Length: 397
Image (cartoon, rainbow, N blue to C red):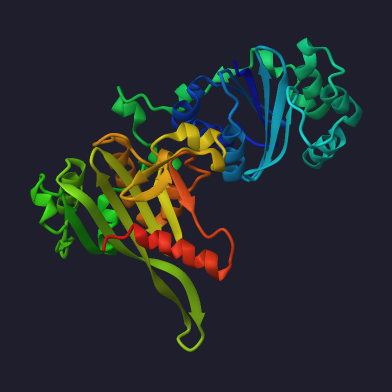
């Protein structure tokens, strides 16, 4: 069994700044680790924010992602039910130090202490080393660790100051009058979520491949891609062609977009000129299986929508199970083993509605376990050529 007690500490941060960032991870943490973040208990001290939560896991994303978005230090401390404890120290999204008492890592205790001192200058080094060296009784090791590293957080794990703040941040929709924005305080109504209309100005091409006819006609009929006119499209036309793929009428759907790339300042013109960048969404079906890919020419990246998050998150790259899809060898976790997976319509709509800021929609840090990105491993000519060949395989000819 995994950790049952997790302590999340944000030195020199206010609760109103870091709590929403942790709460925003609730869906991803529940999906990946079956852990309810909404039951987190919080308190705010003069020295920072402190949280306590329980569960069967201790995902470092709880500290890493909020520390990246708030650009601050985050410390996640955990204790396992069967014994043992550990921590993750994060700074602006980077895990700077990690310790687990039940494993022996290559990092020495002195190195752990040195990394902690960088973020906690007033740390009691000798007391910390005693905790790391297992010289402290198991039952009070967490309190002694906090006393050595973060004295102001000592005793807060069992404090009555801890309260749930999730319910406070969720409006009571049963009372519209109570939830009306206060114009006197300068508040504005919440912005409407973007829709598919965002991607329509960037749409430059739509190609489709119909489902192959039933045997034996498929032996004599060529499968040719058709160009679908898209000029003047509204959201309704876009939704209709997407539904044709989701319902199984199309075997392949390709949507081409022209997006704004990096800019170059031209002194002669006195302004910045932006180069157009091609991006392509590929929806592919083979029998009762599906794949969803996004090809971004900005950094020559190939993104695959993840069908099975467990092997993607837990297994080493050389141990991943593979399968054949359209004659190509691919990782099995990128293939949806069902004809109409609910994840594809959901994630396609999410991406297309944020196509102008796609980096956040495709980010492995902000949305861990949703998209898998593949770029060039090295900058050699052979590696670039291999990468381009892989990308071209998945374009509809």
